[in-house]
Amino acid sequence: MRKLVLASASPRRAALLRQIGLSFDVVESGVDEDKVRDTDPMRLVSQLALCKAEAVAKVVPDSIIIAADTVVCTDGCLLGKPADAAEAAAMLGKLSGSCHSVMTGLAVLAEGRKETHVECTDVYMRHIFPEEIDWYIASGEPFDKAGGYGIQGKAAVFVEMLNGCYYNVVGLPLAALWRIFGSLGIRVWEGAGIYDITAPNHQGSTSK
Image (cartoon, rainbow, N blue to C red; front, side, top):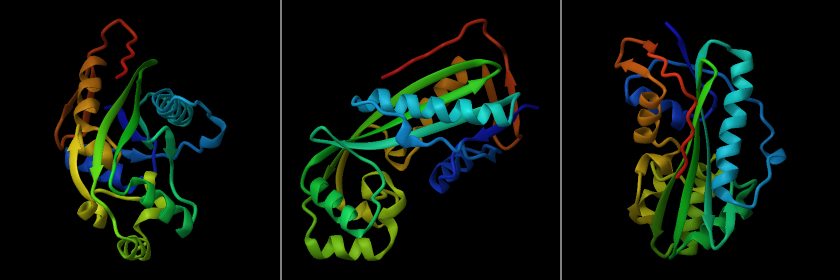
């Protein structure tokens, strides 16, 4: 049985993997995200996800590695995790009453083969009043989340509509991950902790 490893300390990504019945270990990549620079958000998240996966693969070889990186993009600006309350307020003010894109780079490594993908979701937010922003920041939710909000938490009341994958906004596009498993020949039986690679003789890469 090959070990499945999540190269992320995100509790939300771990919860989503558990939701679909997977058993896995968590190993943080230690990658300095500030050292990976690209003005194109799709290339950026793809490169970051792959860097994280490759770093963890060196620590736990002969494993199936899942890595992801998520950014929020609005008006050409990339929004990562806010450093403090002032930055969180600025981010939420920028997102208020507008549409933004959430992009997650996904990388899976198995037996020297790799597959990458970028999932994009458009999120439409209603106008958020200043006192609501203060209330949300006081909850403590914004500080470990790209764009300064978590759709699965209290910020759900700010979101009017989505175009795309909901789970991508949470941080891990599950349907895309399952497709990657299939393209790499990884067969997963729910709850059994069995990961069998049927080993197609190719190295794939996809992007969206």
